[in-house]
Length: 139
Image 1: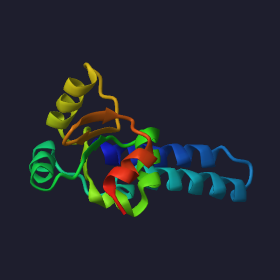
Image 2: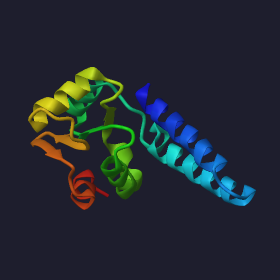
Image 3: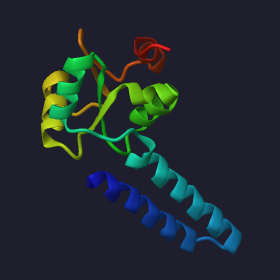
C-alpha cells in the first residue's frame, strides 16, 4: 500500500505547488505535471505485482525473470519504460508491498534494498542495462 501513498503524496505536493502559482494557467500546468508524475511512479505503470513467493514459483516453472522494484525508483521506471511491452514477460515484485521480497533483495545485494534487482535462473543482477534485459526477454 505504500506505493499508492507515494502517488497520493505526489498529488498533495502538486496541489501545494499549484496553490503557489501566480496564474490559473501555471497552476494547472504545475498540477498536471504532478498528476503525470504520480501516474508514472504508481503501480499503474508497472505490470501487476506478485508476492516474492508467487514470482519465485512461476519463475521456477517457466524460467522468466523476477524483477524486484519499488515505487518512486527512477531506475525501476527507466527499466520499465525501456522494456516496453516486454516488461510483461517478467514477474514484478514490489518490495514495499512484500516484506519477504525486501528481505530477499537485502540478501542478494549485501544488506541494502537496491532496486531494480533482476533474478534470472543463472543469478541476480542489480540495476541491469535495459538493453541487456530486453535481449534476455527475447523478441
